[in-house]
Each structure stands twice: as C-alpha cells, then as structure tokens.
Image (cartoon, rainbow, N blue to C red; front, top):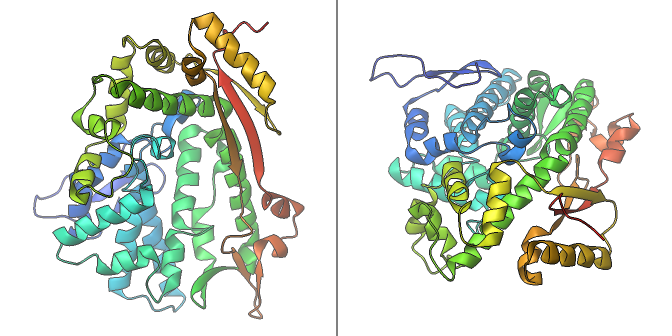
Length: 419
C-alpha cells in the first residue's frame, strides 16, 4: 500500500495508472508526462526522502519526493478540473503546462531535501535547479515545456496558475501535509484537499477561497503549524539533521588534505568550489542528477572508520541513532554557557577547541504557519468583497499563527560530563 506501482499495459501505451496510498488511482495523462517521469533526472526522486531524517522519530516517514511530485500533479489537475467546472477558461495547453510545472517543481531537490540544500550544492537553490532541469527537459522535447516554464516562473498572464504551484495555499503544500501526516501517523496534520480545491475561485490574477470554506483554511493553517513543530522541527529530527550537515562540513574540510571514499558524484561537490559560475552548467547538472540519499548514506557508513576522529564520531552516532542531546530556548544561549560546553567537549574527547566546535551544534528554528508579509490567502464573500484570512477568521488563533515562532537550540553529546 505504501509503494507506488505501475500497472501492466502494452509497451506502446504510455497512459499509465499509479496506485497512490493517499488518493487511490492517479493517472499519468499522456506520453510527454510519461517520458519525463521515466527519465533518470526524475526517477532519482525515488531515492530522495520527502522529509529527510524524520524517520529517526517516525519510522514510517520513508516516502519520497517522487511520490509527492505525482501527488501534487494529481491535485493540480483536479484543481483545474474544478475551476473549469465553475466556468473559468483554462485551455488544454494550459492544463498540460501547469501539470508539468508542478510535476517538476521539486526536481531540483538534492539528497535529504532541505537538510543539505546549502551543504552539498552551495550557492544554487533547489528552485533554481528545478528550473534548470525543466529547461533540460524543454530541450529534449523540442520546446514543449515553454509554457510550463513561464507558469513556473510566474511569467504568464494567468497568474493564478502559478499560485496553484507556489503560494501560502497551493497544491504543493496540500499534498505534502496530507502525505507527511499519513506516513508519520500524525493525524492532526491531515487536511481536506478536496474541500480546499473545491472552494477555490479565480479573482483578478490570483486565487481566493469562498467564504464558506474559511473553516477548511483555518484547519489547513493549524495543521501546518502542528506538522512543523511536531514533525519537521521535532527536537530529535533537528539533532539528526544538524549532525548530518556537520558531517558534510567536516568532510569538506578533510577533503582539502586527502580524498575521502565516496561516489564520484558526491566527490565532485565535496571537492568543488562553492561558486559554480565558471563551470559548464551541463556538467554541474549532470553530476547533480546522479546524487541522491544513497550517495550520502553510503559515504556516512564508510566514514565511520575514517581516521579523522571528529568525522568518524559524527558518522557512527548518526548511523546508530546515537543522537546529540538538544536544548531549546526562547532566547539565545549565553556565550559563557556555550563556551563551557565547548571546553568540556575538548577536554573529555581530547580535541582542540576548533575540532570540538564540530560537536557543538547550534541554530535557530523558526516558522510562520501563515506569513502576513507574503501574498495573502484571500477569502471571497458573496458580495464580491475580499479579506485576508487573518482578518476574516473569527478565531483568534489565526492571528496568532501569523506571528513567527522562533526557537534557539544547541546540540552536543549527551554523555558530556559538565562540571
């Protein structure tokens, strides 16, 4: 049930059906979609976890960017079908383009998704890499993705199609909340996708939700808040993800002195300058297209026996889920407190202060369930008036959700003996 399966058909028939655990049967609509899905640049998404290290806490959270991309495509096509039913003109060409744009919207994610976005391929966002991949497919298919690229970049006159891809209430977010809720077992994160799509209206160049759907929007925002703090930013998940980042940081340092055993694709980025501006974009994309979670975890397993004591210590702990202790606070930790921990790490493990710094991780986690400074989720009333959800809602918690939640944290070995 938890696996996507292609059903058997004739070799020449590219109209496949996928059995998805969230939506049931999901159709691949035509040969162009099929050929893109079958391409290695898209198939690599099968080997990239949707929620990175979250399976360290929720064992079922092993679903992939591949499944999410198909799910988002399904919701896009369903949403456009519902909008057409309300009389909005959306051509078949626009439907195909929007469908392809959302299908490829996450194709630029690297290993472990957001966790290593700036640790492996530095200076290039996953959105930019997704756009590069879309342009590559456009070349392969003789310009048939021209419109999809314009919709993806927001450079198309029907701006509401871009809002379905990227906004504070889009098919991307709807799918990942439903999917992540399902595979983690956190029922509070589930949202009513059909209701949200059915309540959408086109207003001007954007989207709005009918007033009678306001409670579904409220539920969506509350679910997003719950999923962020209970799943995505769970303390143990943060500890694991920051340990993985530190492993890549340390590996880059070690590689300056000697090669580390790893796949050629990972070696390319570990040994590569941070600025890819001087490189052939095709070379960068070719190497990136070979990277997935398997490259990183294979390397982490190999590095468990590396002579560098810091690298091997971090890798062993991650492989065996011996995660760092994490402390969370509303305010930054005092410098003298962090210095005391750092000196104790150095003393207890026989490290220099510099090397010990790799075992004291620190960061800030923050989240807006609803961001008041980004394009609003608008509520449309019968008289034609429009109000921002934060003003329209009769629940105080929506205005509260508009405020950022910021938490400071530090991680260090839980065996540390503090004086």
